[in-house]
Amino acid sequence: MAIHCHNTPGLPDASLHIIRDMILLALDATENPAMTERNRIEARATLAEALDAMEGRA
Image 1: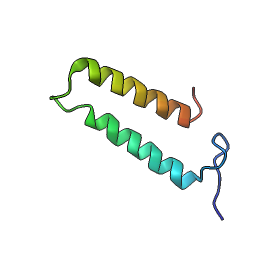
Image 2: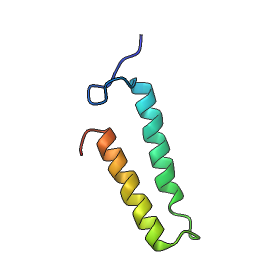
Image 3: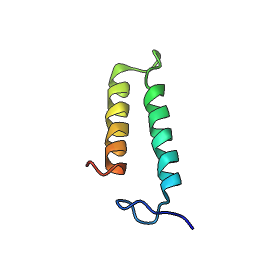
């Protein structure tokens, strides 16, 4: 039986951990020097917002 996270009904905790890890990996990818600064800032802000929302801080 899957355990569900209290702030995101319907998603098992394991799925939330996978999503969180994917967001963190994407944040790391924004460190690529070939990415423009504007795109980097926008990507990092969006990913950080998604992480905050997923963790219930938004």
